[in-house]
Length: 287
Image (tube, rainbow, N blue to C red; front, side, top):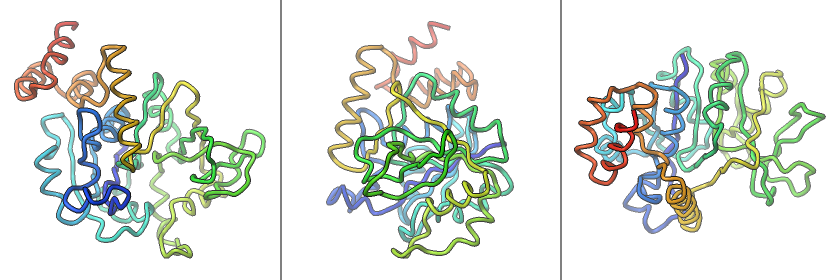
């Protein structure tokens, strides 16, 4: 069984002053809250047990939006990250939820889109003893953790390198075997006082426990952490939806198509969602 963890805590300092009164991941991106997009990725991976890690005081807002996930045929739980101590701390916070299972970890402000995305997610779960890191080519390598290769084999991840021959950035989506919890227990804080996810990934690489999946030219990976990026992501979604007629990140549609819920349940959800009811009805009629 594979579980899913979404890290949706943090200060959202790049989005001040708005994030003084609302969690960044609840902000609208096109016509949906930001959190819908990473949640949709986990659902597309076939995951029904999902933990959302949020800031203290934000749980009530998330429960109001998503509840326990029952209406979508999934189980959603919540835990808090008291301080922004790094992405790696999400492993420790999720320990009692993950238990002995493998899991996906996704950052709440990351957006992914591509035709074969579901296959990438399914393939990651085949080899249960190895982690899968998802990489994406970028122009400005100085802003990312960059994968260095030796032939076709992953050698190391270097954070924000000044010079590099590689242009493959590690995205905010990770698939981990349960063994990663033991690695976390031995991890030491970096110079900036945080437990670094890159350090964990490099330890797994040394153990030959990492598979690299590369999202190529037909994929989109976007960071929704700034006002500009939120706008860019929203315009991207709007363009795709307008041209193709398919919507992105509609949780009800994904739940129905993956048979998490029945058509009768979907119809009930449609009646409460005036923004998407015509779209959902079209999906039902096509069945």
